[in-house]
Image 1: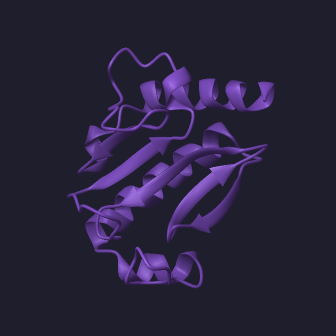
Image 2: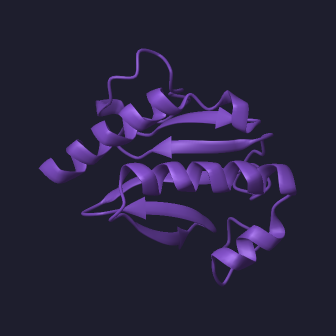
Length: 129
């Protein structure tokens, strides 16, 4: 637990037990997508949510029920170096300088071809750093 979050998970299983079923279903679909695109990726619980990395952090999956500042409905998928991606407005900037995100409320909203292309591009960026 840290001073910004009133909860602290020991591992991913703790997180999965905490989040509602609708979010858990989305998290599982998005995690599978990450592993399908980047099989060698390493997953780590950071800020109480899954982050994925090789050389550096590449992306994260943030369920809306995990508090950090404001809350939202659904699951947010974020690209750490999103400002370098060719996303044609598909990703949201918000108030962030580098990170770009997309919020999904149900699995049917996930555009797998688009997300896969962004993950492959994020992998290329990670390999160049």
